[in-house]
Length: 233
View 1 (tube, rainbow, N blue to C red):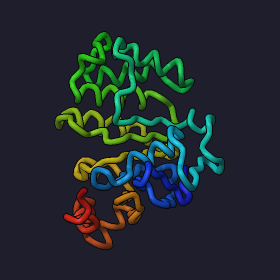
View 2: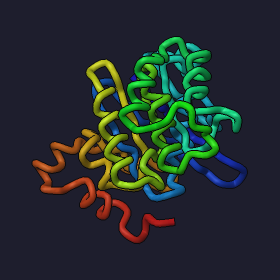
View 3: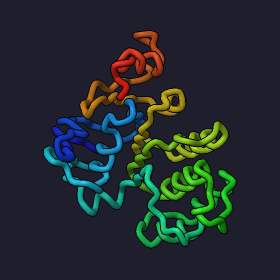
View 4: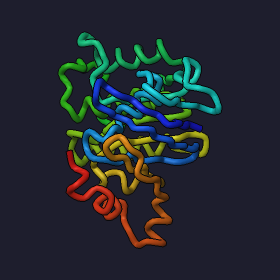
């Protein structure tokens, strides 16, 4: 469904993503795991068609990522991308103008579930409330692919529960979700496949159930094995 072929991105002398070939299929929730600076965000931005690769390519349903495919990919970045004058309700209207698959009803349902005030100014939201709003505005789309970049960063336990529930509700056999994080414990109850990436290189892709059954390892156990102290940067 979404595939990168020898995907590489360099920023000057720094190689952020290094010849990553990866195929992600519908019907799964993937966790992209790795220490900060491992290349997760850069890979996702190239997959979403937001930045161009230095080498290699990204394919969606058998075609290179283009404007058509971008309309079917919902990407929630870590950076703020709303205007300072906007309220939470305005953010929904903004998305509705850009994406035909955006549902105002679903957005309002998610706002109510996450206890977000539609009238609140975005600039006045806490980091946790902002994180929940970004998730709500993206999951209110009927996209084929959802990519959430570090959705659990800087938020409390209850807010994480809200996000986890919203992610599980949108998952389905015709959808694919990719969640990047270095907070392994938060992903363990959500994802069924894990993509390990370090220093721009793909390490491995693991089926969580098979790993638990055949190797007796949790996701956190495998993370420690793969990265340990050497993986930190």
